[in-house]
Length: 444
Image (tube, rainbow, N blue to C red; front, top):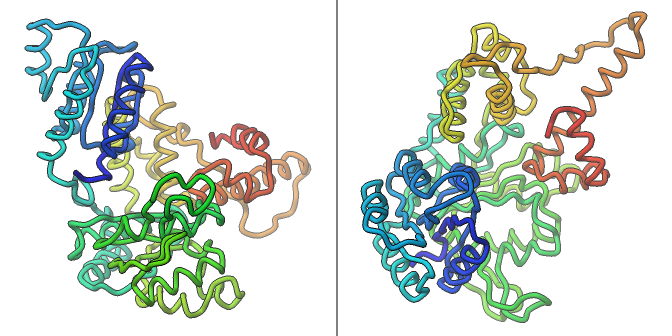
């Protein structure tokens, strides 16, 4: 059984969810739980699961509704319904809707574990994604990127992916992995800037039971999880110098030593890395080791910013709106021509990720099935050069300062993958102050 297999547990009763999660945890399965139909749909939109167990009666709907939703969007996902009643009609309805099994409450945990184990063993291991990744757009910049990815995919050389925050560096890395000979193995992404420095060695290389306070069991690290596949180091420039030394040794020796272990283990991992910073400048400033830079930067792949391929917005925006509608279970909305033109004029400092956020907000706020330019709430562009101040100096200064503050907040959030606690720490703010400023500037 694959230790990374994941199960979604949906039930109105906290006791039932806890009981099932404990039982599956002993089978070394990852679990996520939801109490309502809406929560379950949201989790299915955000994560990939190998199995779903759902109660028949939910506060805002029924397990049959969730089953139909899953059959429409995730047709291969095995589903079992947990029911309080032993009724032939209920069983018939469940099986007709596509359920794999109907388990009666109170649950027989031995029977539950046996069915889950047998079902997951029959389920083929997941590929890197359910559907082939695509890089949308016909601009010259994207055609060049596609050609370069095709060339790099069949190599085992380390690749340094450069580009601005939100431009799609991880997507490019996943495509390199998916098109290459390691596609059948794991792709493990890690945000180097989001791991506390004191836990970094344990996260990368694993630890042994008792090696430090809280180490209650042996725990494999990211290198072991990626064995045979690809390890993607996002925001690699944020690695502290001490960790850079240990990473360099692991790459040179192709082996790792878990924290608290006297022995090294061989690992076979392809390394892809990315950062929005200029690594060469980081080396010159003494913040990044030159020997590690040359080890990681065997080949550089640059992902263009969205403003360098404005013509691709016409293909990107409808694709994003279709996905948002499908995830939310709502009708698809469309952009009015003036809204599309406004998007194509905007510079997008946050690139494709900012485009997704803008469209998600506009989809929620628009009236009817069309997004107008006013629904986008695009920030006013700051002047490129100092301009003579008009009479209303105070109002213009306030607006300008808000734009600067918004840009700094966005940059910190992008660098921490929208982890508000980490972004607040990076800006020297309290979490409460960070939350207030985000709300004030419409970033929440």
